Image 1 (cartoon, rainbow, N blue to C red):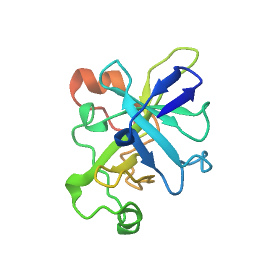
Image 2 (cartoon, rainbow, N blue to C red):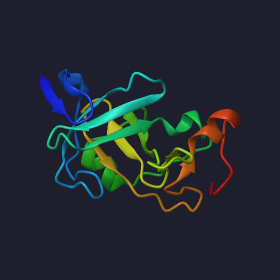
Image 3 (cartoon, rainbow, N blue to C red):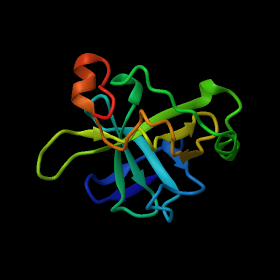
Image 4 (cartoon, one colour):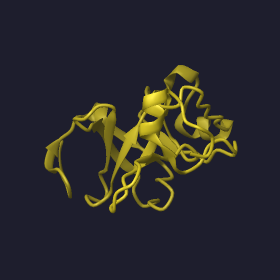
Length: 150
């Protein structure tokens, strides 16, 4: 399938890269279809909306820079995307790259959870006070973990 994107132009994706988010993503509820693919610079991924070419997120596996990360996902959300086994849940965090410089951060309070079997996903909101919307990635990659509240 060929899709048009704002930043990458036209690209080809396959069915394995498609992910359906029944409720969309917070602030982007109208976008329910996405393509997930490597960004070309490890360890990042693109998460391109199939509904709006102007909507594209950059994602990272939070366990790479925060090995102590825990995503306590409610059963209702697991049921929504059909997760029956924990190993089928892929957890990814949306990153923010400030336009005017500054540290690149990841949202660990609102991770994306994708069922690797059904290709359905949802964004969850975690209530654990350790997880914030802005955790510095570089500091965690250097030390293997971040200080709380960073």
